Amino acid sequence: MTTDYRDGMIDPIPGRLSSPPGTPLTGLAWADVRTRIAEAEDFLLATADPAGPPHVVPILAVWQDATVCFVTTRQARKARLLARNGRCAVTVPGAEVDLVINGAAQLVGDGPRLQRIADLFPIKYPWWHPAVSNDELYDPADVARSDPRHVYAIEPAQVFAFGKADGFSATRWDFAG
Image 1 (spheres, rainbow, N blue to C red):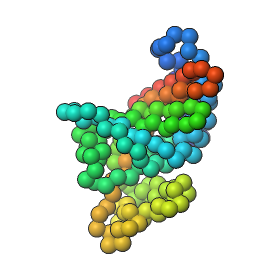
Image 2 (image 1 turned 180 degrees about the vertical axis):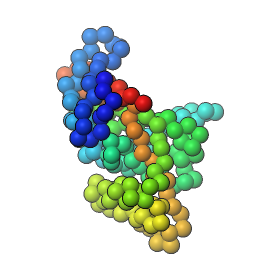
Image 3 (image 1 turned 90 degrees about the horizontal axis):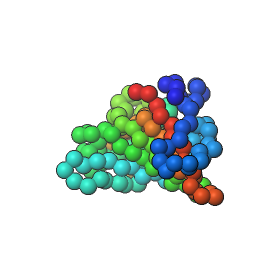
Image 4 (image 1 turned 90 degrees about the vertical axis):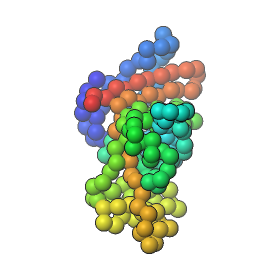
């Protein structure tokens, strides 16, 4: 395992899952996983409610600074759950491989980073153009700038790849921190 996995840096070392025994690695390099996350359009966020069931919802997400970034209203259940417990998982379903990213969501409050994140959304989702003003991100429909959104970045603690072709294969990448 390596601790420096940021884009363009040293890649983490893939490892086997603890079970089932004998399961082959997926054969994906970390660069392939990063590309799949960056290019994916479908993401599911799983959060935990300490007094209730897990909460899983689809999100729009982008890959920026080696994190999965997404936007939500401040009143949304996922925002309330993440305020209590930032630990979460993001799944990225795919035709050949499914990815699971475990980590902790952190609020992004830095204006320049918010702008970089906002600039990525219309590239992936051409119909959605969020705006940044006064270090806050806004839905494009909020022309009055009255309802700023939360932007979360999830830095991976673990990433799993589950291959689907020719039987089951799995790979795990562990990250320090």
